Image (cartoon, rainbow, N blue to C red):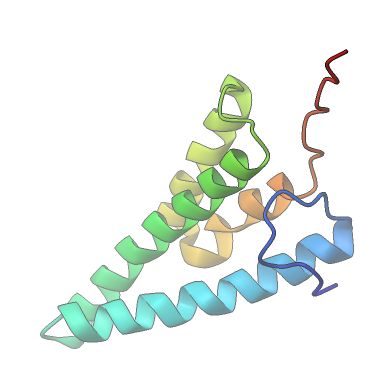
Length: 115
């Protein structure tokens, strides 16, 4: 479940995707809290900074997965990765990381062998 979490090009099963989601959610929550504490003067401004950080984090994770899987030329997957940012706008980090967790379940394209 929590194997090879740093390798973004690995094809994960359902339990692996849940482990990925939990781990990257905790990391994103920590990053959002640190950004909110560093760059905000008041508590309400801290929440705003944390929300923006969650959007950026969700998009970054999604696009790093696509880059690792060499799928940056796939328009459908790029649009799906952009939807992770939209989901983060409306549902925060909880919603924003659902799509990157799904992207980890996709297989990397096969490499063609040269003769």
